[in-house]
Length: 355
Image (cartoon, rainbow, N blue to C red):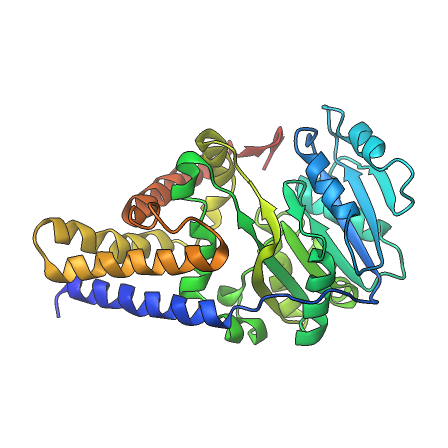
């Protein structure tokens, strides 16, 4: 079998795996829980998008919750806006964050301060990003599924809004774990390579969080959400991702320029073989197809099919981004190279802070 045929066969097998995962992906459906919950919201210069997030959070149903907001050195009036939006709601507390000490990155330190400030009666901590807008039952459904599965950490993956050119790259996040990760096995695995989590909406049992060392265990990690799951796994816990399409919506990046900045911050953390493997599987066959290879054409179709399956299951537009899947992989490779170059030069920054 030729290298092109092998790559195409692998792409086909992975597309089938994505289809199986799409059926196995857990979907939270609960509507009510008696578990006390602390929702922890770190914010830094989020005045332009905090209002929809906070309004949706305060409209949660079927759950006894408190909301703790930590203003992490905002200069755009974020804290004042939060106080105005939450006027008269005794569930909300707004804290002034402290600058991160030596050895800490900003977001892990903000999250640790929030966890330390959470009500001692809360047995579940829910970390939420300011760009996420929740459905009314989102927190209750997440906590119910956490209890039903017996897991220690659960990340419902929000539906990702990806305007314009960002639609070529942003949906690769969901596609990647649906394609390469055996979801049910990953939930019970302790292998770091099988860890997937998303800090945009992440629920963790407080006992597991404390046992893992909290965010202090991931104080210097850029991808702190995945590393927090790994810390939970190292101390005997289990967790993973689930379908958050009906629970939450987010727009991480409103433009291609924002996406480039965001991915430059973190893509250097990808395992070294990841990009060459993606190029081999999803760019090699289409290039061969252009030279008349039937096997290459089948490989291209397999890549498109896998991308379309992931898009339909996670609420993204299936076309035309799926048809441009090879272009998406090439762009991801470029972004990864840009990120690794910035990391080597020591020029990585995020929200005004050096990483």
